[in-house]
Image (cartoon, rainbow over all chains, first blue to last red; front, side, top):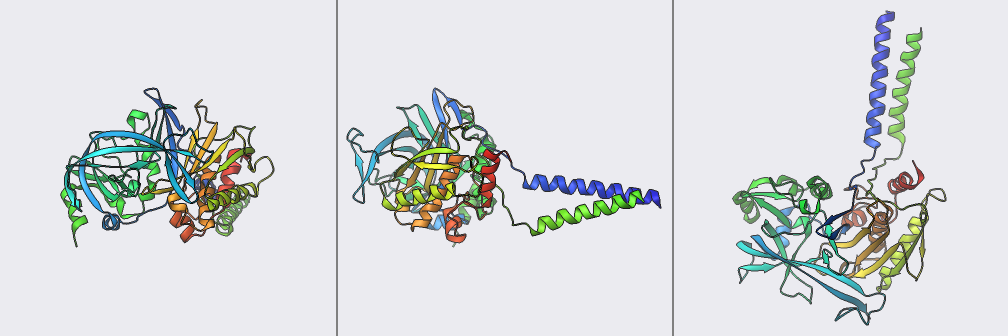
Length: 245
Length: 192
């Protein structure tokens, strides 16, 4: 009886310890993004973080809202910057920052050019489309490249499906924008991947020394959404789900 | 007899930890960005509010005060001081990026790569914030101030560090630091 009670006592003790350990793990913290600054070809890499103004749970809703949806390959990437200031309620772009007051800010832009293979939605009267990405890109003056992990810079050679919107930026009226991870899918070997997955052989931030896992952790906003289903979906099947009535 | 006492003690231990888990306020947790401020300057952080939009300007001031008033001991609680003279630790500016998908953005500067902030740039995208009510802007800038202290995103939770403004503010109505953010700051600067 005494031996049995001793066994039960030990078992209960182990259970208690396991409970406490598990509780500690659940409540614990997992520091990630251990280094926000690395160097690449003399450029400092600055990793930023954003608050999302627009999010989607359904990629089909994002598709419906888009003006133009294309499958294509990035053929080149350009960068630009502008100085802008809010004056009497209106935003103005300045020629330079010489006459600038303290509220002038430098705006960074990246312009990937996409060679379009297929227009899935909308009309396009050229073979290429220029994308505008704001707040990311290169500040050559300071030698800094600014990156948002959940929407890494598009690189030449990358094959993507983009849900595009006509740009409302008056300085770049002929460009299109997309809504970060909600409007971008990677295509590898005719299979489609949402931004919360690592497409085979595609290390989007490798050249900056940033592991894919770090990028994927920041795309966690997609995890409880329809985007989570897009993990190696055959290209034709994915396009069919978009265009189905 | 000794074994019985041990058995009863263990059962009580499980009961106590389960009860404690059930009755305490649900805490969603926090994540850290991997960067923090050295002490000093922490807890005294000088920020410059360069927002040209009056609503963004006042929301920034209110959000800084929200962080200054969190329930932590002096020395652990941040003290953001609004001061119109460089060098500052935190720069807050309005920007205008139409058609982009974000309303607030934070870039930390750690040129030395030693894990400590040197300064932080915060941008409020006035393309969106010009149509937000004051407390929604406060929610965005409060979130960005959270990054400037070293906190990372906490997805889907009713906390200030939730990156989705429509969920954080429109669904949960959060525009001030919650207990989760307070715990995060305590972990970063209070040693526990």
